[in-house]
Image (cartoon, rainbow, N blue to C red; front, side, top):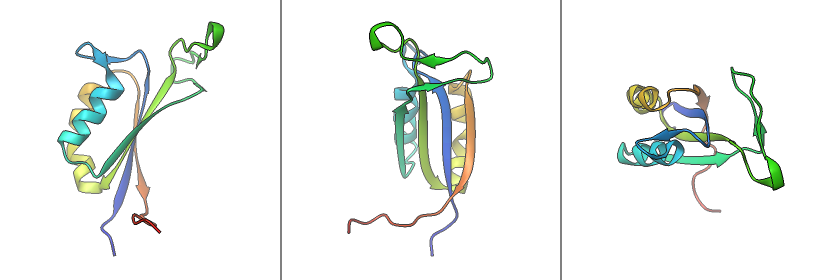
Length: 108
């Protein structure tokens, strides 16, 4: 039996920055430094947030400001401990912590 797991979701924008570099990159690097079990960032095709501004591909298929989702998985206690770091980095965006269940982590 594994300890309770949580999935941390951070919804940000591609244009968001942290110390002159992409925020999603800075978050992934920080999660790695904090020894989180795993993290991934993904660019979305289209989305909107509390400002109701649509983020999608712009002229000639070039993204104007795509939505980015950063996902991290680990034990609840570890993710709760890093929330202050994430809140400091994500100035505008949504941070969500949801229950997760480990089904498989080994190659077949």
